[in-house]
Length: 248
Image (cartoon, rainbow, N blue to C red):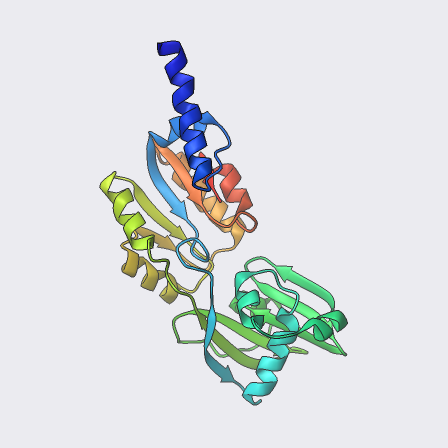
């Protein structure tokens, strides 16, 4: 009975999880969950819905239409949740067909060439990459700066809704004496705001994917307990692989 019951318990757990849309790669991860001490989490699409909408438009020496037109062009081929949100509901197929040399740089933003214009859009890191002077945004949210041929055009600010069960999840983890650490590429103000709303213990902001992995390494080396990472299965793949338990 004992010999039969142990594998059956694992099979039942894996089967029930898959019935609820959770695919577990092996029974060993169930064992490791028993000793879980820290959950390190990404923000966009994990704690939030990833359904952004533009809240503020702040052009510089151009009108709003020109700023948005260039933003739509450079984001037309983007696979990032922010890029998809910016282009949501717009028919940009003709524009996208004429875009060349499109690049999506994780943690920075996007760039492309379009009819003789070199358009870049993304975080402050993207502006610094091309030595473009820009005006720092003060609003809370995901800020996208835009420049054409090294000329700064302004920025837009998008907001994202927190998932209904995010605060409850953090509360339940705390009840089990599990610490929650937020790692995000967002600005300090945005990371602080969501951490306060959800009761998250520690946050690190303005991170590139490789910086997230470095902080995760520090958490793993400094903890005797299991460390889990929750994030996007594409951008956060290095961290998901490195953690004791990776959750996509």
